Image (tube, rainbow, N blue to C red; front, side, top):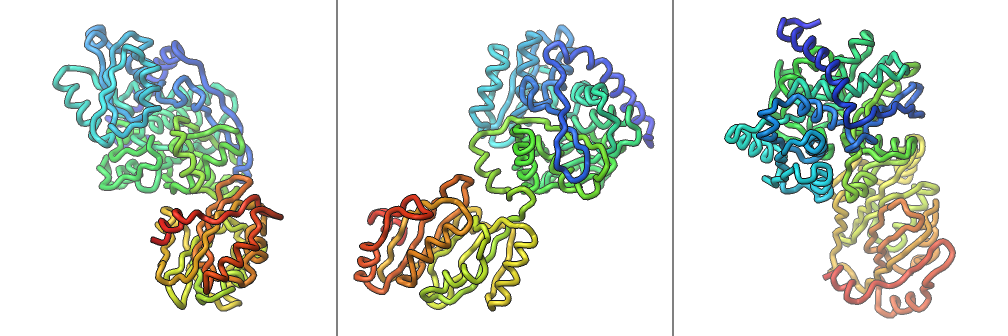
Amino acid sequence: MFDSEQGLSLLRRLRREILFARERVYRIASPTPLERIDGIGEAEVFVKREDISPIKAYKWRGSYNRMAVLSDAEKARGVITASAGNHAQGVALAADALGVNATIYMPQTTPLVKQRAVRKLGGDRVEIVLHGDSYDEACAAALAKSAAEGLLYVHAYDDLQVMAGQATLADEVVMSGEGPFDVAYLQIGGGGMAAGVAAWLKTYYPDIHIVGVEGVGQASMKEAVAAGGPVRLPELDIFCDGTAVRKAGELPFEICNELIDEFVTVTNHEVSEAIRLYWDRLRCLSEPSGAMGLAGAWKQREQLGGKRVLVVLCGANIDFNRLATIAGEVGEGDRIRRYFHIEIPERRGSMLTLLNDAFQGVGIRTFQYGKNNEDLARPLFGITSSEQELEQVRVALREKGYAFDELDESDEVRYRLVPLRSDLLAAPLFLDLEFYERPGALRSYLTETIRGRGSFCYFNYVYSGERVGRALIGIDFATKEERAEFLADLATSGDGFRSCRPLSEEATQHLIG
């Protein structure tokens, strides 16, 4: 299987170490379950639930297995490592269990929730040193201290015992009786888990197809295989922070280069969709890196019909504040999210005409517009729909003669950029609207309330997933008298909406300068 004696020797040593790791890792934890997840094409997909392990991730296996073989002298001196998350928790757990002091370098940007988890697991055995703004900077400092003080560095992935420890999750898969599996999707950061798991799965399921899954912007192993050895990525996407590694490990590369049959890269959007799938189907919450395997399987679901597929949910240590960002990346099930910039005349009634012409019965998820041209408006609409519904919108726009651009994402959407020129406004009124999130409710309110009495000059709305939607709407009137008449007739609540109130004068001045 291997071209070189060195490679063959490494695989044999790894398999032997996996057998030894079997005996060690269960001193501090129990096996994790294998659970079926439905709805991934026509495949039978099983999830290895590492998210319910002692540290809510698989990393404890490798950390403990490595530290369990420390010599007495190494234990007396203590160990050192660098990590921004799961590996740090694994080292802390092992340090407490084995009575070994551990110094853990973490970037200064590490969230407090992760620092607290490390301290809770390691207690007085752990010292956290915050250094630098990135994992690379923390790692360089930890390695320098390791060399200067003779402390053993516990590597997160580039270590034989660490890889062997991670592979025990594959041993549990084999022992589960659910195999053999036809395909396994293994996420890759530095490559330790993928190398160990692939080695063990190939031992017992020789015909299994191993797919290495990496994030777009962090595919260090794919680049290593192409280059014939690990290379440093010039840029690194950190959305999937647990696998954000600039350079694949040397030892994992030797294994993955031979045992990974195929590489697939997944986008942040695809990973977010996989997180949603885990929540919808299993009611479990994965961190981005933990969902990458499922993202790969989902991406290739059309070619998995009739196959038994294995994915690893390798971690659930996600910062609560990230959930809003992740939710913003996803659609709704198989429905597609698209954005449209549409040109319309800057005149009274043109916006409502557009809504009636092209968006009848369509769920609008984003609506952004600010008046910045006397003659032309370019509102932005975001919709989540099936491909068929999406095509119906395109056809309607073309048939009615609208010029439009279609896009997946933009800075305008991401940062909620809504330009507005106050010098083009005569007598603006801004309304803070809360309406019930059901098809047609927003369009109905706008049609019935505005009725050509004013011109839209501003609109800022994004779907939040709640039962009540919130939008800030600007209407410009020809005179202050027309604005006053409109305000006198304005209902504060009614059919389809919960409340509507004018924005305060102070807030209005902040908005239009």
